[in-house]
Image (cartoon, rainbow, N blue to C red; front, side, top):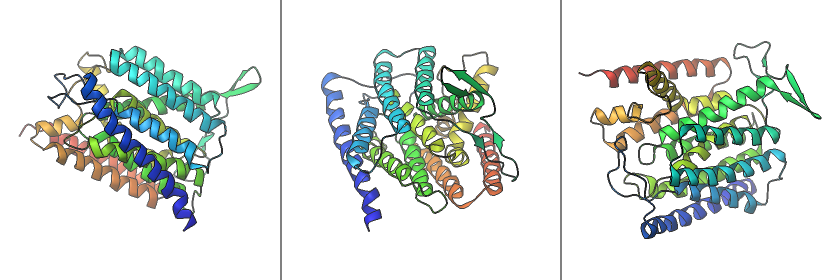
Length: 345
């Protein structure tokens, strides 16, 4: 029973804080007309408050401090500092609509903060068994610190990739938040399992789940508030970081976020192929394509939820070579869905 409250109490604190803050931000948005801008490629056609990401991030950080069961080492401090940077940077972007180049600079700064905090991936396990793929062989001496080059490059692309994938996923009511919640619950279940047994990571993951759920109450269709850049960037960052926090859970994160990541890669390739900027928003994403096929918004969101849940569950059940098989099935499934939505008939 004590283990139950170890996780339930911080979850409840994060949920209540997020719920109250999101409700307050809806009223603030109405009063000061802080609405999400209506654009051609956006689904909503009425004024809806944004800055829901503020509720997620603040409730997450407050619950971290109030949990009382976490020791604050450099990595946890790095998460807190990075979260605050995302909070202020994301809100500024929501107000000023920064260019993709400036957004990328902000994302690189966040990665640098985590690298300075000591985040690194020593190796990636070989799914076929045998020798793992080492990422700590080549190191660059910086004063008294040895910077692992391959590990740092991997983390750079990993975190920035997740942040942008989640940002682009945030196109329908409840979509990015729901996928983030599924990811947080999956990482929580993995963290408290006998295989991993990392209670601190479990506490952080369940706090994240509570913070997202409190916001989702107001974000599921029809949404009363959006998470904005701060929310989507934070969810991408924290999921990517937790996946390698205290040991790699890379395959797990890839399975949960597989569809959004594959969608992002495909859209980037199509934009480049058509001679457009890969970072300029449009309606090529899978969720928009399904809407064009006549699917109701809730059906699209629940369909993507179900895919993330199925492959998230497989990440908890399968190990090594079976996870690789699940990733292959995910890849094939994405392309089958893509072929279906691109079929004009």
